[in-house]
Length: 427
Image 1 (cartoon, rainbow, N blue to C red):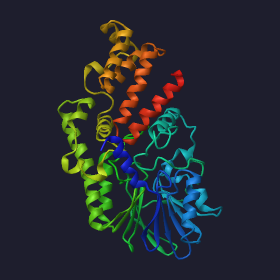
Image 2: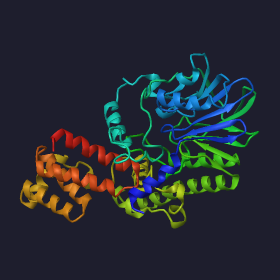
Image 3: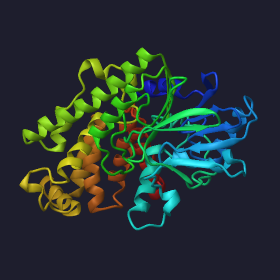
Image 4: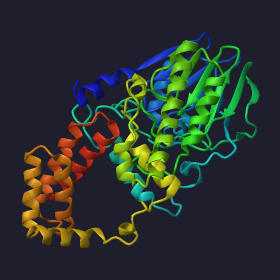
């Protein structure tokens, strides 16, 4: 299969469906970027996560209402990412409900998006990662961990701040007559909580596992996600010996042996990236060199749930380097490097001028070397942002690279950036 065909085949993970997990628990998959779980208790419902938009929440609640008309009594946020907390007002249906979360729950939706920091940059990069603005089907295929086609009305608008908190790891609670065990399991977030129903051997695993290589680093921009801690959390998940695994994204997993094998391989893949990256770093390799040095062994890279639809090994390697050693790659030449514009000026002078550099970029593109074409054309536009030939080469190179990607985030980022630059130049 071509990379695009692989990504299209991955859509099977997000076919819209309400999965029956046990005789009183269900999982809504494919209605939004993230899943929503419901547990039917004696006198009410427990909702696990609330998705990214009020419209998606309305659609999911309508499906749940075909199963039960009991009121929602408790909502559990497994973590603070927007795609898990933005439909709570819909599920609450105007009633006072318990909103339960980790005691360190921390979301910009709750503490205010106007805080100091690179918020504007993060929003712009998130749009590119998720392809917001691309046409579904032809450009945006999926999100890597969710469907490419989902409602965005009320995006980020339906959150309710938590009013109850989990302070003790492994805390056991009873809600609506259902026994729940809540365990701390940091991975994508430090405030991650998983929910285990011991009587049904059902585990809601949040975003620690989904059907893709884990997004140990998100190109939208994230602080370092401690890889060792994430791997430890996978071991914690395996220790529950669940019969049913309900992830925050992608289909549920059934069968204790399958779950154990999947979580074990996921943990092994992360620990391999850590060990192999550290080996290369101790040999003096830079992050760029590590990307070629660290590749998963065959018995892991062939696993269907470790394909690089969302995260990638290369991005993980770079994140591990930066997260453990920082930005400096160890080469004295990079202690005080030339600014990109100055470097581009000198590079152009070496090849005989800006136009010759633009010609080299166009020739590289004609030869099918899209990455080199993009790098060369990018130098030209640093010098002359209005250089039409180089801009056109850069746009074409990004589209060519997008076509070579089965990673949804990379594909979306290339295509939306190309579209934005094309719109800006009118080309």
